[in-house]
Length: 71
Picture 1 (cartoon, one colour):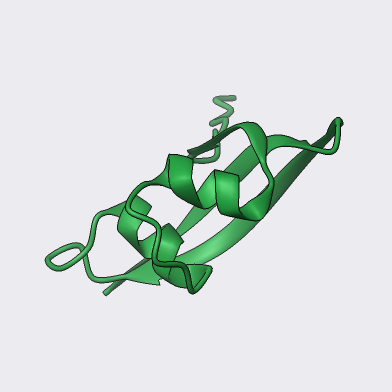
Picture 2 (picture 1 turned 135 degrees about the horizontal axis):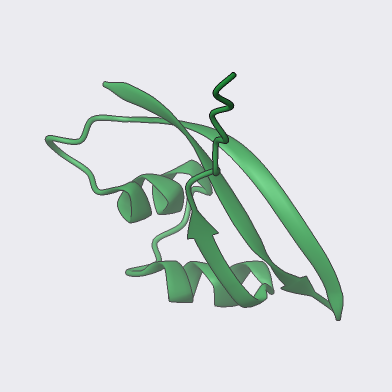
């Protein structure tokens, strides 16, 4: 099992949203997208279907960007 931060961004009723999830899944049995669908308790076959179910528009998921500062 691994735990990753995943960000979902998109629009709901014309308003932009950004949601950070702490997602725990087994990479031997699930892809990240499958774990997201399971997290929402959906039977969707893809993230696109999940987005439609949730009422999200122009949505996507991504990993957070971490900036390393060197001094």
